[in-house]
Length: 241
Ligand SMILES: NC(=O)c1ccc[n+]([C@@H]2O[C@H](COP(=O)([O-])OP(=O)(O)OC[C@H]3O[C@@H](n4cnc5c(N)ncnc54)[C@H](OP(=O)(O)O)[C@@H]3O)[C@@H](O)[C@H]2O)c1
Image (cartoon, rainbow, N blue to C red):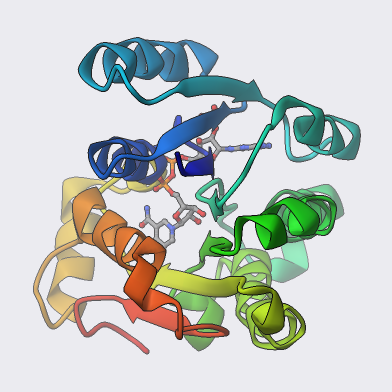
């Protein structure tokens, strides 16, 4: 049985990834930070639908390295590691609190990298190890008002280029799926008018749905995707990048 850890399974994109991977036969460790009830409900639903698979809950704040390191003791085998957690802060960088920048880097870059160090052996043992980050088009293009977020996402794209070279011989692939704008609660602070303005800039004329992002995560987890590594795949409806 193949096992994947979905970090951020309580988020809109992470939940869709979990539902799709369960359908594909994966057993899952489902992570939440604050929304643990949401993940528990999802686990109940998946257990009743897929009785031959297993679904376990993981709770950790990725701003707290001790909690992140504690995840390893809760995992048995592991074949895939998906990082779908993330938040952003809006505002001019010159006026941003240092703590907000530090949190973005800790939660989206430093904690995931530490977890990967601790889990490399398990992924190597799998012979099928997969690591997928949810990046962002802003990691490639950069965005005013989201400088720290753009920096963190760009760091993930740089990380997969370098780290993929170290672990290719272990059968581990590491890639970034980088969405443009996705219709999730992360964008709920935009008014309908603001969203329409963004729609006008996107060649596809609309935000992506979560399943249009999940599709690519599943694709990277397919056995035949084993030769793809170190890449950032932009899924943006033709926007920006
Ligand atoms: N939505 C977009 O337009 C868009 C575009 C490009 C890239 N992305 C990326 O796609 C990923 C998923 O985004 P989404 O739209 O699904 O976001 P979302 O619905 O807001 O979900 C955010 C997820 O991040 C988790 N999280 C927040 N703070 C955390 C912390 N301190 N420690 C651990 N987990 C934490 C949340 O956990 P709890 O809810 O349990 O607290 C939740 O699972 C993110 O990496 C995001 O940057 C999104």
